[in-house]
Length: 582
Image (cartoon, rainbow, N blue to C red; front, side, top):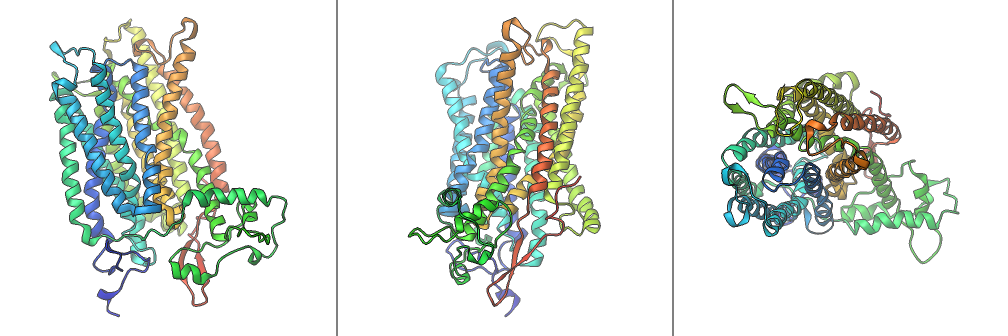
């Protein structure tokens, strides 16, 4: 068969459900239409998130704790709602149509938000630069706009990245190798959008107007969607073949518990499984038995009752999800560390000397651009130099295992928050030296003292943020990879909620009986260094738990070759079955 007539081997189809030619669809050609959307969507998100705490305090007159809590709650919602979007995509209408519907909701939210900060009737008046208290209707409209964006993000976030990864055929050696770099460059485009937001949009919001600052990414988002749909003829789509995911996942532990008194057969062939021809004819993936979480194997024991037992494949899918949950749990604290970037780090920066030259003043939220800059510089270095160097040493196509990548990132995060605590100690000493008491007084200490903590978090994200996205996509069962990536998004979401809970509880505990709050409205009379130190302690404990979970984790093998007999050859990734060692 001619190369031009070769179809993809992974079962992907076009929008009408027809097999697609490998040479004319997918790969980087298709992904080029997606990268623009990701850049503009991240520009919109970070254009809001990076400076939202300042808008809430200066325009809506919220106190520090309330503003931090509300930013965390909204960010948490943005990252939690993808669970619903991924479930709808994997179980019902596919990634493309879920993304299409959700992107329209996202754009609607951006339009409403732009209106909320532009129209006089929807925003508080600010005579002489001091804003009046916002009315209840103005506050309600503002938050409805924000949470409309969160709903839209629920369908776009989990599906656009996995849809991009679907453009590479796992059964084609060349495309599979290209896919290794996909997530690095996908996040690179995301970082570009974030960089423009923290450098350009934040300045525009504070100096030229919030309406223009929100209007620019809204227009950019609309343009990127048009570009996305122009690329439709080049896209590959996975056929939705999954049954009720939630029902299957719940059924396995229930069946195992019912059979808890039974002994698992020594011969694994005695466990219930459908014929391999069934999986071939339906296009579903058959999963071979693994020795992990052996208790779940009892769900596949043939009992002779009318109710059929769970198949080995369904049991193994449940095992995979349980393994992912264990890793997911130890990513929540690192996500809490990242939540500081758009909240307390920004408030910390507002107290410092932000002058650059005689007249220009750096917006405190713009320092977040150094997170992005360090990412942008580190991603090409990681992909072009670190990975090839480590690949020669280990034989692993990724250079190091994904969990090793995560571990390195978590260590860098701990160092970053420790430095943040040390810088805050320095700030408190300057405050004491100059007898500063008012929250409006500027601490005579350059805002650039915060650069190390921002930059290290950016470098750490090259390891853990990209690593997490790749890990949960790569290790998820094949038919639920959109849902799998929501482990990544929901971890960030719960990390934000956890930070909201922590700042609220610590404020209540430390201010009890007239005590001084660690996170008060007057940051010049608070103890952020104690809070950062607390984060260092729980992060260190969490690192120990991560090492334990990683040592127990067994990587999913690649099902890449089929033989005429119907057996699947399990081609294990080099070093990926070893425990994590750093």
